[in-house]
Length: 272
Image (cartoon, rainbow, N blue to C red; front, side):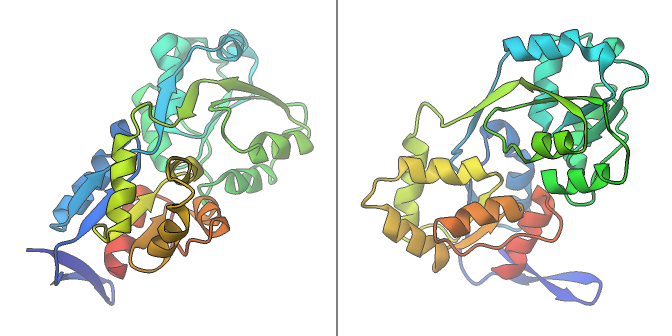
């Protein structure tokens, strides 16, 4: 039986969904488990079409960051992949960290991965965004602090630029690449399903998951794709940054109060 949540005070109750429901998930294959589990727990059908692929790389800038690990005052991890990359290439990284170095993560999922590798997280912003983290740092004196940030170079410059304005010295390192999958067949199939009204809802977890979808779509498909995503398809994003990318493309989208996959998926089923 298909179910949906309805709110009744503090209790989440379920009601049967009237029709078969298909939810498109655009996350990379190695990041879909949680979303798939939630979709299936409600009796809906997930359609996996990753519009993003993450490739771990041991770049020259990452080598330099690891070489400076004993000098950092802060290490900031903005995603689980940024941590996994370091420990893939440098298994003994934790033992080399300056004992006085503090660690910040954006979100509890990244914290969980940090804990898995023996890292103790000192700071998680209430708002799981670069802006939220900067707000937390504004309450501290980080002038002349050396801060290391391993990440994808496709990330926004908001965080490093904001930290530098506070007087910190920031070392960026490319620890992974965010790219369009070499095989775009599943993305092309997803676009066809959206245009044929075979998708009921779609989820986006980063700006690139959105941009890559529209990169694969043809110029002729884009106007109708925007229309479908704004009308017949429930389009949800993990947070305001991804939502803004959708809105810039003309797509009406929603995002949850807490920027996690779990909260995004629960909001989705409340809205269906």
